[in-house]
Length: 464
Image 1 (cartoon, rainbow, N blue to C red):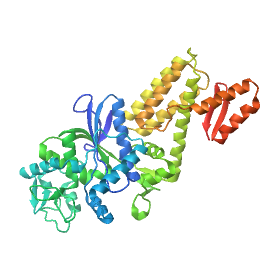
Image 2: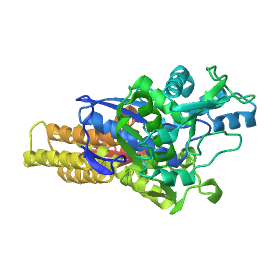
Image 3: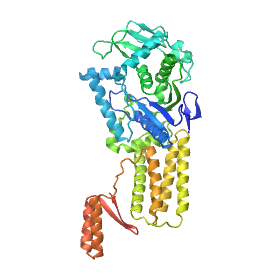
Image 4: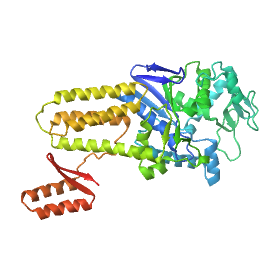
């Protein structure tokens, strides 16, 4: 597999430190509100990356954090007159509801900043002891210029970074580029004891400490949104590499932005949508589909027309799988003509999918391979076929949709017992020439939103 490494700006062969194992970290949410559709993109993309690595045989340890102490959380807590902990826990739970709706698998570890405080303080102490950090009163800052490679991820010279830096009111930094590792406690804020007094961590140090604690000093893959390249990930690298003297991450992946009606999403433009709001209108799965429909590094546009197209595409996939189930139910025991060629076609589609995903996780081309497979299966199963060949088709279809994290709402038993029994009763009534009863059963099912279709292979049903 080759991925575009933000650090080198090149497509590189993905070679983990330890053969067969991948240590992967993705920056998670700051939990003070519902996630918006921009947040959903990295969540969906890097869940797919994890799934694909596992599909390719890697043992993946995937860590995604929760920032549960932060200025925004404290502000929200003060507005509501509750504790920061209550706000954080509330929106962690809401995040988990949304990600479950999106069909996202939980990370192996979901660490919280508040549960990593000893590790955070230890790293800040080490940085100060080595001369990379200094304290002013109860605040601790990182000496950015002391790290000669600062700017290597964002590919910006230090002079350009300096021009964009600033000193906030009440900060006594040695240099505008320096950033906070530890903040002295203010009245009413959550705080922890340290050698600099009561305080709480800066944002950047949290991820570094959580990575060191759960994955080690050097990881294989660090992921996040494009907006995190600078300063967040740049600062993570500086902290970690000055502390350990070792490379922080071998590969960096960053996804592109989401626009709304071709405009940047922002509250000021009134085009800011939470995942929950969109899901209540269209369902979660079309959101997931939309995130995978373009290459992850490309910008993606959201509007009602696009989300409706995603719903329609998902409908095609669900229908194809239901038709395949029906064909399997009526499958033959013996092979039919053309099945060997069909098995070769299945292998071709599998390889097509792998080629796409191996090319920097090109989910757009991966989905094209899936729809080519759907077309092949539909043509092949239009006449009775053997259960063996249809099973092979179903296994490949399920494997590819599982990598993409789609079709997770499919019923395990597509013919509910009650409907199956009524269909059988109708068949028996027709054999007995009791057409009045047969018609009544059909009409009763229709009233429940179930349409029966008489086909050469038997009776099919679908929801209206």
